[in-house]
Length: 210
Image 1 (spheres, rainbow, N blue to C red):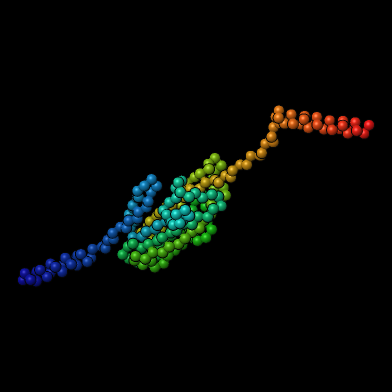
Image 2: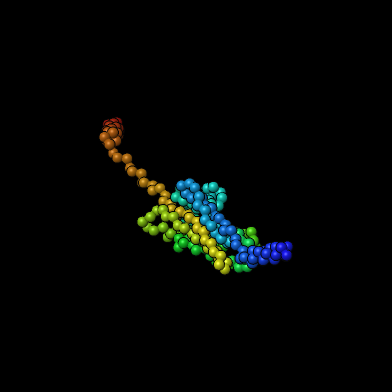
């Protein structure tokens, strides 16, 4: 009797745990911050990482601050989006949106696209190239920093990430016109001496003619 009771209890407990809703551990994304250190955030089952190309370091980074490479009107900027399924289920449809600031215009790539069938542990990368508008900076400022935001959504799963760049006006050096040399006392003495020698020469020529 005790044997059958144990079997019934074990079967009941096993069924209970099998019917519990499956939970997924939240993934963590960490980003380096200016001034040192990093910030880590929980992202859920869907993760997006937005980076910008650093031409000085020759690699993609999370942000470019005022001490890093700065862009001028007309320059191109390359952003990279990395979307990853960090959950336990396949995602049939993933919508991605990149919101460009008004100072940037799209050159290549897409700011809104759809990913189909993103499997567990799978990721997809896209690059977006933009150009800094000629009137990107206000007339009263020579340097501004802007933030570009990207979002990803699939059903109830949602994540967002940002990337910062700084824009700067590049002003060429003003070439001052060369000033003409001022006539000083020495110049006047040289001119007077030349006239005196010329006068004597003309006098001697006339004297010989006579």
